[in-house]
Image (cartoon, rainbow, N blue to C red; front, side):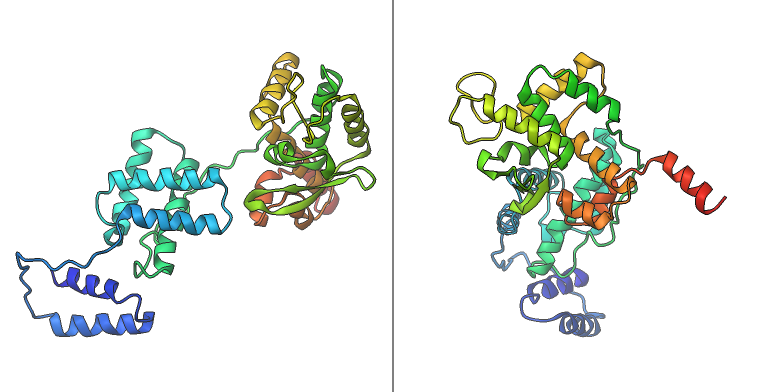
Length: 330
C-alpha cells in the first residue's frame, strides 16, 4: 500500500517538480513512511484525471500536428486501442511487465511475425514517451522493452532483363511511362499518383514530389522517361491536370490501387514474380549504392529521414563484394 501511495503522490507532482526534485520527494516519503502502516479508507477522494481514450485523442492530435499521415494515425489509433482492451487499467498505472506480457501474448495468440510485433512495440513506445514528455507519467514503462530482433532477408530487385521485358510488353504508352517514372526516380507510388502535369520540368528532367509528412523533395528522371512521358501526354485528349489518369472516360486521376493492379497483371502475363511499385524503389536504391553513389545522396533521393531506412532498401550485389575481396584483400 505504501509503495502505491508513494507512486501516486509522485505522479501527481509530475507537472510541478523536475526529476531531481521528484527523486528527492520519493526518498523523503520512503524515509518517513517505511515503518508506517496505511489502511485504505472506504471513502475515497478522487481527483478527476483524463481517461485512456482521452489521452489517446491528445496523443493523436500531437501526431497530427507533427505531420503524420492519415494512414499512420489510423495505425497508431487501432494499435493503442487494442492494447487498452487487453490491459484494462489506466495507462498511468501500467508497468513494464504488463506491456511485455501483452506483446508476448499477442504474438502467441495471433502467430504474427517478429517484425509485426516490433512495429507494435514502436507505437506503444511512442505513446508512452509522449505521456512522459507531457508529464502524465514519471517514466515510460516501455524503456526496458528493447527492439525485437528480426531475421534480415535479402529482398528481391528487378534485373535489367526484367525491366526491359516489362517495357517491351506494355500494352499502352501510359503504363510504359509509369514504369519508367518509377524505375528512374525511385519515388513512392503514393507520390506518383499525386503528381500533376505542371509539376514536371522536362527541360531539367526533374519534378518535386510530396513525400511522407508532407515533405517536398526533388526527384530526377532519365532521357528515356522524358520521351515516353511526353509521348503519353501528347496522346491524351482530356483536361485532367493529373499526370496519370485512367485509360477510359471520365479519365479520372489514377489511384495507388490502379497502379498496383496494372503492374501485378503485367507481371503475371510475363511470368515475372512479385511485380509491384515498391520494388522499383528498392531496385534503384540497390543499384545506386552498388555503383558507388554515396548513401547520404541515396537517402536524399528517396526522401528518408534516417539513413538506416535507406540501408534497409539497399542490398549490395554479392558478386561485387566477391570481386572487391579479390581486389583489396585476396
